[in-house]
Image (cartoon, rainbow, N blue to C red; front, side):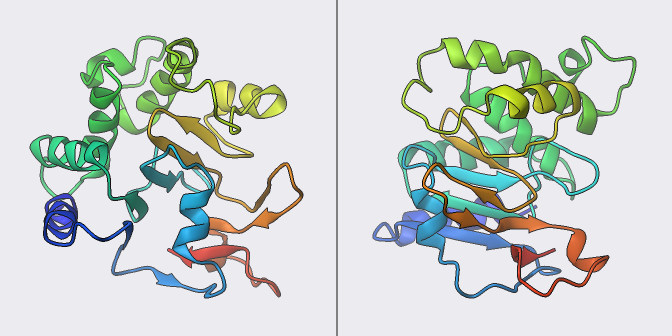
Amino acid sequence: FLKSLGLLALFELKPQLAGAVYIDCDASIVDFQLMPEEILALAPSADLMGVSNFKEPIVMNAGVLVFRNKKWTKRMLTTWWSYRCGYNDQISLWQSMFAMWGLSINPGSWASTSTSNAPTTDSLRYLAEVYPTLQRSGLLSRTRWRCDGACGWLFKWSGCLSEPLELPHVLLLPPKPFVDETGKQTVALQHYSGVMYHHEHKDQWVCH
């Protein structure tokens, strides 16, 4: 739960850094061919990049995160630190993202269409509901990661992503390899199939 403060200190002390990658202590890089610069290049306007879970989707898993060293990132990290609550820092991460977008940070509002009170599932439903509002904000007019068509339908009804979804200053990545419009395949940032399956070819950057 100190990661937000540590990253903020890193960017303040090392302003020359283009960005930073945070990895939990129970995770490790398994594909050394993919470089952080390639991940940042996926969306030049995104300052935070992360991925959901492999089996039970959430807004973003805080175990592996990629940050760009920008003013927005520092404000978000400061907000994340202010919302911290014990050792579980993922919910406060989502609250910080919503707050930076000018959306509700009250978990009670996340359950507006759900009988469940679990913030992990309701926050994802809330994000899917407000995504059209974020689209109309004009902040996403130039993105190539719109998650339209089948991807949009899947995200709306399940919270799962089959391709990246760009939000204001944030890029949500799918927990599976994906192909861009040029045909280039990018491995998943992280997902959990590595503990259940043996793959001949690496399909994730970090095993977590």
